[in-house]
Image (tube, rainbow, N blue to C red; front, side, top):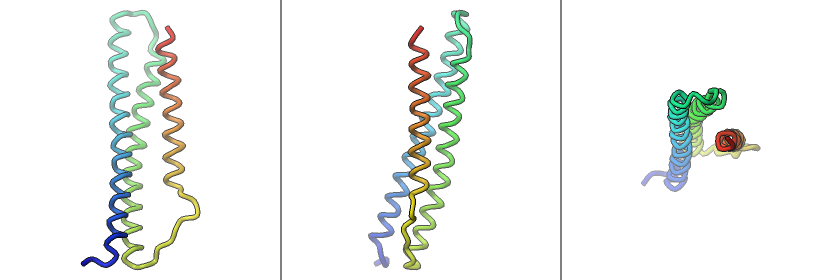
Length: 124
């Protein structure tokens, strides 16, 4: 049996949860970018609006994808560090959960920005 198997399994489950979150961010960013293409085609056919708000959708999509990729890398780094600490029995708890705080603030900020962009799009 692997020494401290339950700790390693918990570390792997945590890593996979972060990977799912990162994947969701990348997928949502791709959807926003595709939505931007749809808006551009719609505006080009109607020729009634400027594309300023549509550019914001593309920027949001790229931002989500970029943050998702960064989260992939950070979660792998954290997984490896925790695995080494479990193996060496030098576990320590960080004073502040930096990765969680940054992710929460980034997602909340981007969510609010998406909400504002959608409200602007719906208020003709």
